[in-house]
Image 1 (cartoon, helix red, strand yellow):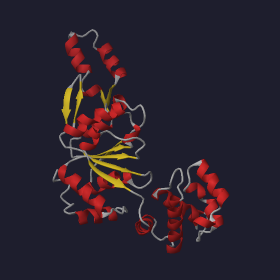
Image 2 (tube, helix red, strand yellow; image 1 turned 180 degrees about the vertical axis):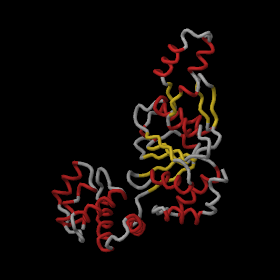
Image 3 (cartoon, one colour; image 1 turned 45 degrees about the horizontal axis):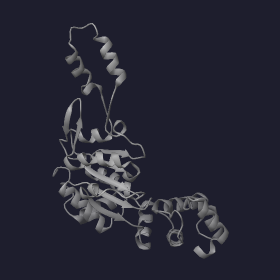
Image 4 (cartoon, one colour; image 1 turned 135 degrees about the horizontal axis):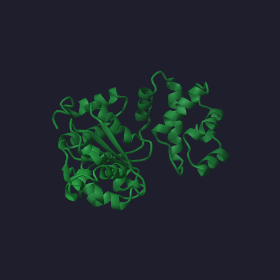
Length: 294
């Protein structure tokens, strides 16, 4: 694992590398990521939607110069979608082609249940990576069923996957695993024990302003500050769905597209849909007016 992280010599170096890739990494998260790289343990990142959890994995893969393999979780996710699937059409074709051959049934079964007929999904791709350790992003793991979460335990413990027809495949290079969760449900203690953990909260005014400056270079400082304060006011107003940093950036870019260099009540109403994503919240803010938030 040392080869992949030879250029990341300290927490400060990691912070600088992330910032060079336009990601503002606070020291607490930087320390956790650094420990993940050193210890080879999975990292579970929880936090509100839109605060940059997924981008940690994307930037890390770029810094390490390795492949990013992403598994997007959802309700009903199963082994066929996440790990592997047999190419049944190709198997059937092979059976028909060799029907008249002298090969016995056992030989034919070994052939059609071999690597040539195996379709890799993200988890198996990560385990079978040959050149160097990839970054494996298991995104929004809280959306998957508890049964699938239980399946992950073997992978996160031993970095191996068992395929009944082929046996157990162990990773030649342990992937750098990052799991993200929006906490739509509580994850199991067994999963958490296998991971380092970090919670990403909404950023402070100062940090969010810095993120805006890095992500949107050239933005007028006054407009950036107005939008950041506006979004922080929205978060404090107990919306059903509070806006994340992604919505802050969308709001600023929308104002720029409309030729606005100042956030007033009229402009705020025009771009409200970039930061408010609930019909109830939208109606409430419209009725109350924007003045109290600006």
